[in-house]
Length: 347
Image (cartoon, rainbow, N blue to C red; front, side, top):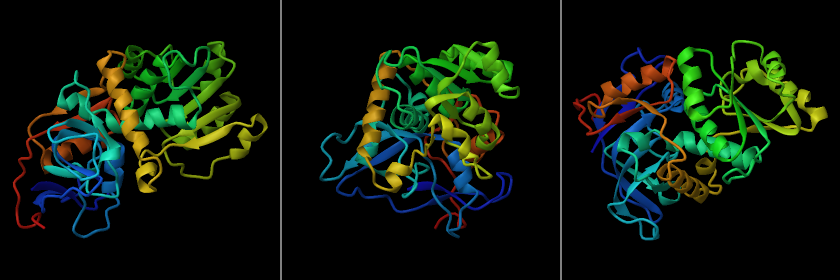
């Protein structure tokens, strides 16, 4: 089958970075499914992992996908051949940048019926990240209107995770303040339902005071954790939660949270599959997301589709868009797999 292999490169312009290649088609294990991949999305984690490849043979990445099931393992009972599914998968196996991918059935769900393949492919990783951090780490209740009267601040609301967090938080009853700094990103977060918009290039504490917000029950940092941690510690309520998905560069001054007995939470979507903890929880959450989408409560965050086929060139272009750090929403590449395999990539 055709795949796209990624090689170490400090930047996407550093060749070869990605090549079209082939490898043996996968076989489903007892708890797996094999999926015929038709659309993939690119996330910041793809670019970061690509920049740190150590295997001289390269790696097959891709952590958002939609496709139809081609094989089911003997212990899989919730899915059948032909089911259309969406998922983020795991970094412990080859990713979705392949004609076929083997995935643990606990990590998948049936794709939203009301979305196209591209629209659905934009959703798994960001939906899982947003859902896990809001409802499993930060302590908000999962249910329509279940958190009325509680305040959430999202730093970088227009990114992939922020776009999903705004929608889920609004459905769950939170009053949402999202940060954005450009006219287009301000319009985007308002469109998704943000009640207020702060400019993350300006003083967040002053903006909260001007908006008559005394404190936030939760603060979700989705960009530059070091830069926003001190302000978050000042703005979070006693016994509240500050959370982040972005690794810090320097040690964080955790002591700032002590007298408020506030908590700091990391969210890393692959932790469950990396350490085999509640893997089925991801399939359940994705199924809930699909229901909310089909009910018209949540919409896809797809903003750009590259529809010339899945190959090294199209994925390189998608990586360039993500690495430019200007994306609003998500970019998706749709099939078929049409790369030109050469001797270098055929490993």
